[in-house]
Length: 412
Image (spheres, rainbow, N blue to C red):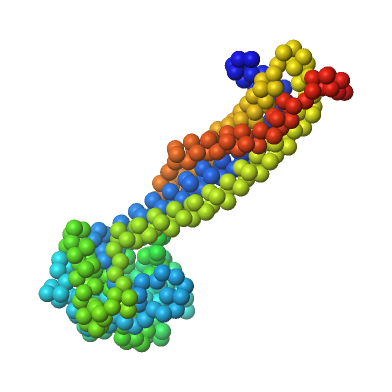
């Protein structure tokens, strides 16, 4: 029997039981939709995070205290006070680190601030006047504090737009004093509205001189990080190397395994983000693929029922000359057509949901979300769904092909 005729017969049989066919492929549709949606969301989230990392400015190198965490056990061993003023001075020395534009220490902590009885809990950042160059965050009104403010440990503050709205919605913020840990700070600037970034929200933070934060707010003499901006992106690898050599010499470290600091670049951060999102996406896809297996079991069950219901049809076709191979091909094709159709429908539904999420997150919520649709994932979805149909259709097809034509014709 020609394969074209077998195909037409299989399609006609599926059309005859439309409701059952639709319900049969539902598990495949859900599985493929989940895979397309997870891959799309993973790529969209990765793009959003990478864009925000790049938005900090090109050529940023970060030095953090403690050795680079590689697991939960390392987190317990990090030395949080290993970066101090002497390290800052050494890194600012052009004889030690070449090609540097800005070196800025950072201290931070979430704190309660108040103004005339109103309370807010922002992230307090202690930095230098160069924080706008590092984080690409600029004042909307007023100004950034000066180097003399840092040297004099003055109590001045630049606030985010949400803090201004919370405290000064009916009055001018500049010149007013807010209280942090019972100490009055004069507002000298208001940051431009930026919205949520990957790691922090500038609208909900305040910036003070790092010396003031260390002495009056945190009571520490170390830094939580040192941010360094290169003169050009090409110099980043050289700067990272110079930083490592300088701090090892300053800390008396001759064994890299005993480093009490670690240096990271934007490229490393982006690679790490790509690896993390890739692993999470693969994990979620594997979980979504379970529904394909469940759908395959459902298809096998329905096909076995179909074989029983069509016993007389099988006997009649065999009496008219159909071979075992013809019967087996028909039932296998029916199974593959079912799952292939489910795969195509799942891709279309997944694409529609991905577009909907893009519209909601990117356009309505203004999150900078990028639409992402993976053609390889779609092709894999169709291929896997058809493979599921083939694998789970073999047993029912074999059962149908092995039926005796005489007994099949007698079946009531």
